[in-house]
Image (cartoon, rainbow, N blue to C red; front, side):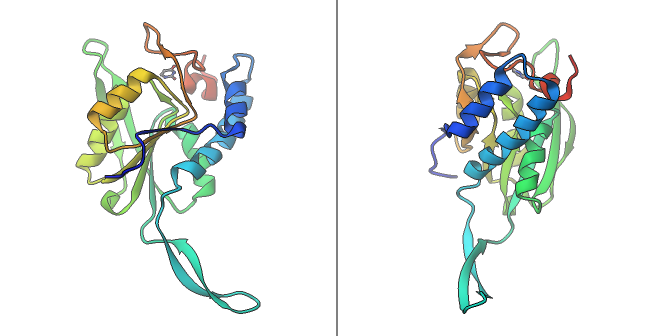
Length: 212
Ligand code: URA
């Protein structure tokens, strides 16, 4: 459990500026991907703020000192396929030692519920801060299902990181996983009838991979 707020909007000016360019439909696939990598570094900085520190003895060129280092087992990053991979790449540049897992979910066309088709996650999730990444928190159904799965696999200390969140998705996550803080660059207005975030940025996977 954590006593952090359930929703943190990362309103740093650089994040907001980059996000606006990403939302713009005139932004190319390569531009979108570059901005996503840059913005993910800034978001990673905020979402890892509560990592525990300890000290280690080192010697500077002038004298010995006790200097801060990250404590114990560190991070696991879990990407929700496929759009999660866009956020993952940038964060891994900042934290190359993080363990990485992947969860694949699709929406059953009849029940509209998320169905898992792939899961491969690190074994020692109970010892790590687990950051789940997915750019768009829309209905919240797949995010909540991914976190169910991770809790069953032992995760205790979880965060959810996205680029955009809809109020519907935040409410769903608060109901299902009140212990999992959400970090986002913006809280948008609402979902449309197809479950897209408005005003949003469109389909994040299509924007980053150029599939539409
Ligand atoms: N997934 C997306 O890629 N975009 C949305 O707006 C909602 C879900």
